[in-house]
Structures are given as C-alpha cells and as structure tokens.
Image (cartoon, rainbow, N blue to C red; front, side):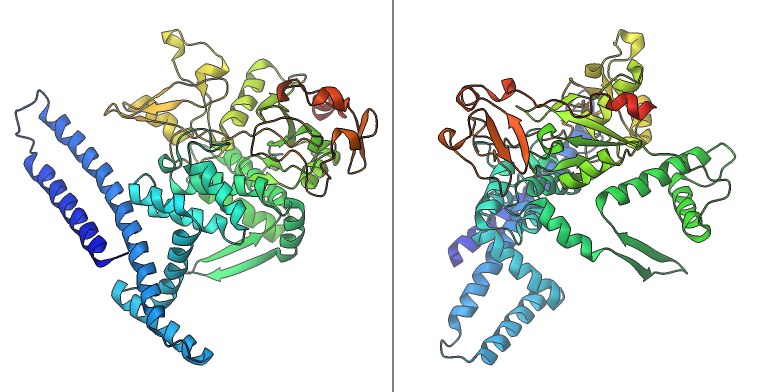
Length: 510
C-alpha cells in the first residue's frame, strides 16, 4: 500500500466526517422546510449513524492495511543475515512500536498484527466487505476466529458462503452485515461445524477431555462459577434451571428471572436438592437428519439453543429415552423440517413446537433470547382478522412482545419457513435472522446442490459400478437402493429409510 494511497484514504475519511458534521449542524428542530421537522431531524440522525457505522468499518479496513504494510516494510528493512535471536528481538520491537502508536498493550498489538495478516492473505472477501462498509470490524473478527486452524480451502468456503452472493451455496436469510456480531458468530460456527474437514465426532472426542469447572473471583464479594461441559448436558442444566426459576415467579417474588435461576442452581449444587424448588423436565428440540439417526452418515444434528452436536450425542439422547428431548426429522432434499409429530399433542402445542423449530429464538433482530423464553404472538392481530397459523405467528421474547404492543414496532412478513421481519416507528425495515438449512449428506452418489458434501468422512464415495447390486454399505448400515435410478432422482424425491421409531411421540407421551 503506497504513501499516495494512504494519503488518499485519509483524505476521504476526513471529507466524510466533515460532511457528517455539516448534516448534523444544519438540522435543528426549528427547521420549517418540511411538515415534520422533528421527524426529519430524527431520520437524518439515523442516516448519519448508519453512514458513520460504514465509516468505522472503512477505517478499520484502512487500519488493517496500514498495519500489514508497516509490518512488511519493517521486516524488509531487517538484515537477511540476522540470527534467530536478533529476528525475535526485532519482532518484539515491531510489536512494541505498533502498540505505542495505537495506544494499546503489546499483547493486543501482537494479536492485531496476526488478525491483519490473516485478513490480507487468507480472507480477501472479508477485507473487501470491511472496506466497503457492509460488515463491521466485529464481523471481520468473527470471520478470523472461525477460520483459524482450518485449511485454506475450508476457510475460503466459509467466507464465500456468507460474503459472496454468487457462491454455489450462499447463505440464506439476511446478509451477514445485517446480523449483530454475536448472531453472525452463531451462524458462522454452525456452518464451520458442518463443513470442517475433521468430523465433529473426532473433534468432540478431543474436546470432551477438557471438561472442567472453573472458579474466578470478582469484585464486591462476588465470583464466577463456570462449567465446560458437553453441549447436551449444559443445555439440559440451563433449561431445567430456567423452568424451575419461571415456576417460582409470582407477584410476591422480588427476585428476577436471572436471580432465581442462579439461586436455584446454587441450591441444587449445595444441598443436592432444592427445598421448595420444582424440578421440571425441560423440553429440548434435537434436529436429527434421518440418515444420521440411522448411522448411515455422520452428519451433525442440531441442539435447540446451541447448534451442531455430534450425531452420536443425538443418537444417545434418542436411545436413552430422554423424555425432555423431541426428535425432529429433516427433509432429505433441502434440510428443512420434515415433521415434528402430533400424535400426543393438540394442534396449538404442535404449532408452538414448530415455531421453536422455525425461529430458534426471539425473531427480533439481534435478540439472543432462546425459544424457552419466548411467547407465541399473532403477526396480524386476531381482532384484525389474523389467522392462527404458522405463517401468521411469531415467538418474541417477553421484552420484544411488550415492545410490539406498547410502541410503534410491528412484525411483518412471516411464512411457514421464515420468522417475521420488523418495521420500526421510523418506517425502516429490519430483517429477522432465520435458519440456514442445508441439504443433508447422502451416502450414495447422487446429483445434489453443488458445493455440498454427499458422504460422511470415512465413507468411500463409490461409483455405480462399485456398488453391490441393490445395496450400499456405509458404516455397517444396509440401505436398500437402486443405484441406477438414484442418480436420476432429484434430492427431494429420494427414498427415505424406514423410520426406526415410528411410535416415538406415543412413547414419549407414555
């Protein structure tokens, strides 16, 4: 990056900032050039804040490029005959000078040097989006984190999925830059888990050895107690504590939900049982691709409020008869929900479960409240003719449910497969996050959406000529198929194996 380019970039930023200040200074409530000057002033402020967010992103991209160029130039000035000790000392000096220039710690400066290196060498789409202002620095940091320690090809595929609209398999739902960083991290993590070149089973087997309980002192006589556990155990504990806390809420109870949850968990741990505290069975959805449930593939399942889990964990939850877990089968062509069983539920209960499956959390943009903390709500009010159907229902959390009915915020545009978006009092529209369903992995060679795996790791991808007549062997499971006809069928018409648990919902109810 030459000095002329640096100067031009700095001039552009200075000009943009000056223009923003002129917009703010020129608008006053007394301005009578429009019918509603206060509304116009508020809209101008929102426009200015939006542009300022883009400016922050462009500034961050320039900071990355300047840092990377500084590092390259400094290293180029070093003597090629320097000893390893001298090279190490020079690297320390480089980081120290950058830390002084940015007024940050040397540890922070060192980490930023590595982030800049990864963005400029391995993540060109991310750096381009940051420079265009379509994602923030926080989004770029998420991309760096989620592509660390994965092969370059896998990192490029993850980046293209979220940032290249012309990719073979682009992300569904609202653009990455329209998601708050925490929600983008959840989506990027889920995609990484499904497409990591090392199976989630192997990575989970390694990580489970690191399970632990940690104690961290804090201020004012407080401390943090954290547990690093397998996802199914952690989710069950959290949901059980949440349900117990909700059961204790009443008009005479002064503690809020967070306090009740903490007190309940502490009582369980200290006394073994909590006196006067109910012990409900939390209901958790486990979305299991049907072929993965049968052991034909090793495709990850999805645990409600968490994300991808190893298929062995999902099979164990099913086989152990965990009555708090509800199995959900997915479509073999699209990966979308196939059915959620209504044998033991009346229709309202089934609708509620479907909403949890469709949305996963409160649909308000950026909200992290999961499905256990949400309430069903008509998008078009019942009194206005709205029907009680999936395409007219949302599940906002209590806070955003109240926001909808006490302010000008309104939900809009729900469907069978997508949560409602939202319209602000200013008239601006904000899209809701939605699941990024993907077609499941297939153990036999078929024609499916390009760019997606069609067999599990360790399962040989054989040709028609290699298959035994009428069968396909995969991980010890026999799946009757006709290899000649399967290649000619679209994914949504592929034959499904026989359901191994046809009486699942009846068994759960019993």
